[in-house]
Length: 216
Image (cartoon, rainbow, N blue to C red; front, side):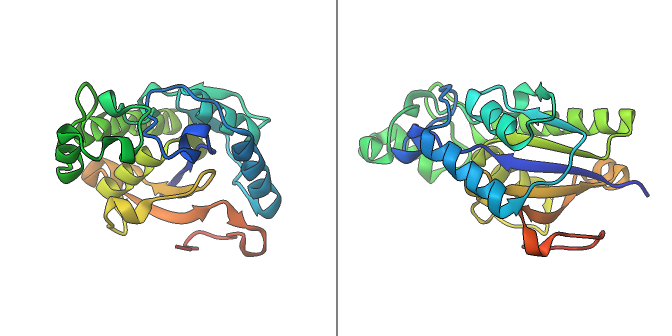
């Protein structure tokens, strides 16, 4: 049975991250701290070899992909972009703590920010993006790709489809970190599920050498 690997990686830090702002559709670049942190991860760990790199169309994801995989051409996948926070975009929780729309949103996972996306809308487009990537991999017999995206995308996707099953908050990852997904055509077509194989980057002293290695 052929197994396919998709390495989901969160982009590096932006100034908006450092300021604690809701940054979804705003197209911020990596900040100097973000670039330095990614370079540190490259020195201390190892990212897997891949045949192709997919990326969110947002600048912070593209810059991260260019730094982590400098010898690979990037393929933009629009569905990998972050949640659109609508009216909350660019604001901090402290600025919004008395906003009734914000209070309704954080108390109801199904709600959407005014003018923004709901969690179900995010999951629908990200699932479509993953299905598109997986279909290309099977058609072209590519078995290992990276997908540089956003923290909210990763957490929501893994909570909905990842094995082992965990709530979204337990799939949170730091900048430049992520997970390797193992997909088989049978499991995907039957259950729309995948296995979560390992965390990224790999510690250099603990590189996985065979199928079945799992580190969480």
